[in-house]
Amino acid sequence: PSCSYSYVPENTSLTWTAYKTNDTIPDGGAFDEVSVQGILEANSQLDLLKSVVFEINTASTNTNLPDRDAKIIKHFFGNLADSATIKGKVIGIEGDENSGTAEIELSMNALSQNINANYTINGNDIELATEIDVANWDASAAIAALNEVCYDLHKGSDGVSKLWSKVSISISTTVKKNCD
Image 1 (cartoon, one colour):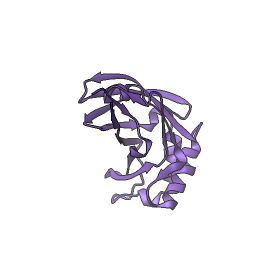
Image 2 (cartoon, one colour; image 1 turned 90 degrees about the vertical axis):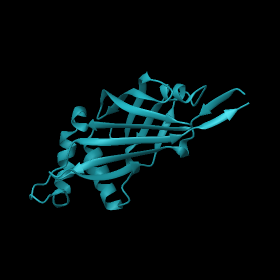
Image 3 (cartoon, one colour; image 1 turned 180 degrees about the horizontal axis):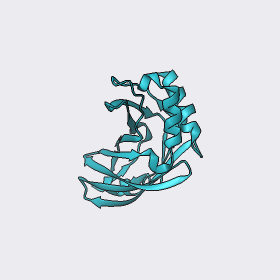
Image 4 (cartoon, one colour; image 1 turned 30 degrees about the vertical axis):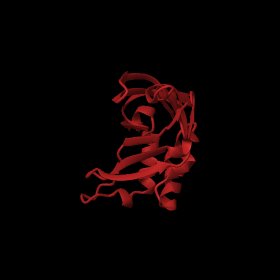
């Protein structure tokens, strides 16, 4: 049979891990609203991945702690230009139907930078993982503003308050297989 694969928005999750203190303690969350445009159906999972264009609603930040979410939205994203969204698109793929690297143009704080994300495809499941340094998007002042409002929460055993600018990102989705 002839088959195609389609993107299913409710099957997609985008999680992130930021790091605090000089001990680099992970502190994570997610974005609940990620919109994917572009080709939403293709002949293979890889072709579907190649066409991804996305937009993240930064107000959908979810750490399961509403007070923390409000601080991140106001003090980090609120200190960025074009703070309502983070936009991106896949601009290149190096690899095969199982794994490889996706080059992504990521736009935040009115700047665009290219990043690489490792991808794996296993059946109908697609996962991408990467680490970004938000300082590359001139977001150091936003990091400082968030660290200031969370000063005691980011203090480590050495008494130093620190919020790292590096953030790990993981995206996973399960696509739908459609066969004639």
